Length: 542
Image 1 (cartoon, one colour):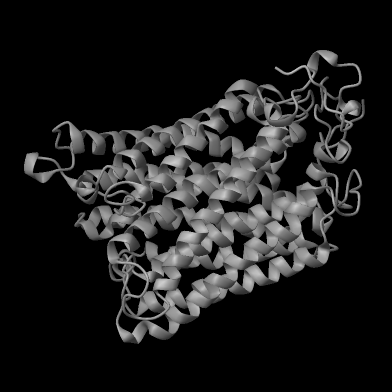
Image 2 (cartoon, helix red, strand yellow; image 1 turned 90 degrees about the vertical axis):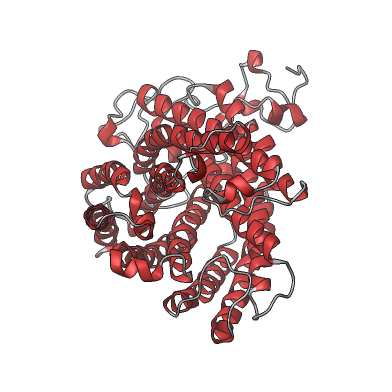
């Protein structure tokens, strides 16, 4: 630990805490144990991965701009689709939510820090080698894994050495997620300020608590599936090899038992963020707080009994199809409850549309569309027609991009004044919103039609009849990509450099919660002594 003191005025945070002499320069970041620093690291890492995953997506869209093979050969194209999926899911969306959790949970529940500070640091730094292995797999003999992000057997048994690097990276990322989850659970259950009961917690804390349990439940299942793949590849087992008595469909069952809860892991924290922002800009209490908690819990429980809706075409018995079809339709009920509650919160509220609210309302609109296309795919006979077409791609991008990513943008604009101490430019924020929303819909809306017309996923080439919609989608894709570069260069960088109006302690008039009880920017150490809270557990009284 360096004894060199930082001269950039963090004296206010350390006036009488010399024993905390915080390391400065690069050491501050490498040895970070402060939840805010680790939150920042997570967010910057996930944005970097978003950009890498985005570049892969743009190469895919450039190839699909017109029929015929233009830029990449089909093998590389398969690698691009695979790695785009893996990097976006495990490198961009999940770490970003963990970054939000790290930053906000201690502030929201009145804790001094996360429960396990050093494990927190470790769980972040594990992600770096994993990301390097994923990205570096492009440069290995035979190229990056090209079995789809789901890593289905028997394709995985035929891949080159990069597959092993991919499996190792997934193991490490899984370990990081489990440690992050343990940390979040212990922090939320054990470190709340006196007076903050579970049913007075902010919704973001609730959704993440439930998500963390989901993560701990399913990450080992994924680890099991990919370890079996590894032993099939190198140690002569035949879990998924029919020649030795195995079954490739078993892989799908194990994978999707992880994979479907995983998609809820990526959306529940987004629901939490939206449940914080909609009341703040509607100037009302959240409608139906308890029902939100119960709905989130129901989604988490039901997520374990829907996995085989990804497998309607594997020849399962009709009874199985019926069960998974009805279970999938049932899970749409708690989600609809949430959407109803958000709309009811906005109903007759004094609404204003600053950028966080714009993204939140955009989220509700577009996420609901994605939900409906998912409901259509839940109907087994329809799904058998639409399986592995662009309709499915359109569906999951509507819930993952317009769901998870838009909610994160919303959360960023809402909390960044608290993080950086400066206000973002409202004009630039609105440009980013409208540009993203329009470009997103231009990209993914035509894909519904492509899918309905029968265009399969993951193909590098296509017949002439799909040319027009693909050209539109590609143009939209590039516009969407540039919008996110604009966001970083024109909104995030100035804020990180402290450019902009100084942010007040509570920049949003009706925002509630303990995070608005501390100065902006939030001091390095907050709530060293547990604060005394009022009856609502949203204000500090002593």
